[in-house]
Image 1 (cartoon, rainbow, N blue to C red):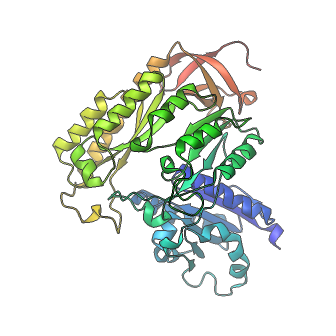
Image 2 (cartoon, rainbow, N blue to C red):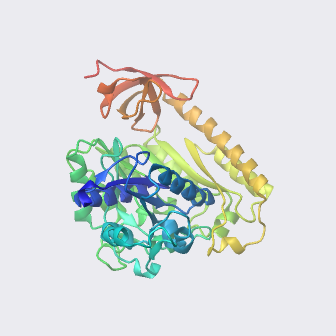
Image 3 (tube, rainbow, N blue to C red):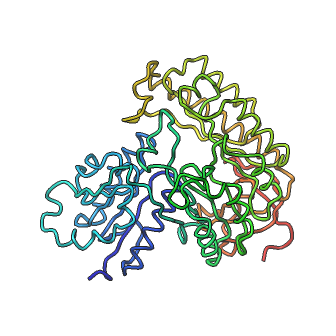
Length: 447
């Protein structure tokens, strides 16, 4: 009986994957399934995969084994980027029953009954239903709700960029966008659920508007999108997850600075502080443009948080070029780094390039940049002490503490108080604890 079946979900990778997992989960509950935590016994386990790094690939097998401990007879389904790129590899993993590609994953419930009725299930490799990636040319809207204090709202999918290290265009297809009307409708639905913050997500959200109505034109721009979202009633906070520097326009920065709901937090991929390596990566900007974007943000929002993605160990990254990146970031007025160690990906240009960097060197460089990130974050937090900010408190009790984030992404902590969960409160930031998080005092008495 369908209504007696328990289903559990596990998400690897990015915020976009989280938004899609949540939408797939709602499809299951709408069909009468009962959603349970992945750590609990379930009849069906759905794993949303990532293939940005080799580590995400390896984790998949570990998660499959975890599901089999919960219920060795359960149906295990793989969806997501890795499932599109290497379906045969996933289907051969012991315990995997079904692998669904980029377009099929949103119809997962339609495959369940056939799987349950298949007497050979579990005795051979899993079934594969995967389209050619050029067929992934239509848009499926998604958003997460009920999983976290904030919601991830997907506004765009796919990518037309050809970065030489990246498999995402092969896994997700061409750049295409949700319609403006549907984005606003989804945002309104999220707001009606008493969720205080929405994070905009996609593969290349600055390209929003392309493919909105199934064509390659831009019917709207990213500036149009954020302008309309800022008007949606009931949304306390809007956050831009990540945006390419060449697509982050002055007008968007100015809108955020004057916005009712958009918060002063930008995450801007850099990948390298060397123009030579940026060229080899086929990035669409140089480091001078990146400096200009940071300076523009600082001009209108001195207190803004600016996060940076950077890749270490890309082919051809000599000691001198790495130090160029390190020194560039050290001198740049940014707040933290997300450091990615270059990982060879099949069917990319970079995997054939000369100048392979030894893994030990990659690890050493990664450690150096993570240390720089800690220094940058500490300096940013210290600059915020004494200021009054608004904190949105999270729902998890972590060793007797509740955590939250200010609008400009300072992480704070306080003794656990369930009455604070999903609440916004004005606080004065007072000191940095030994764990790097900020203590505070309430401005007035919390409700």
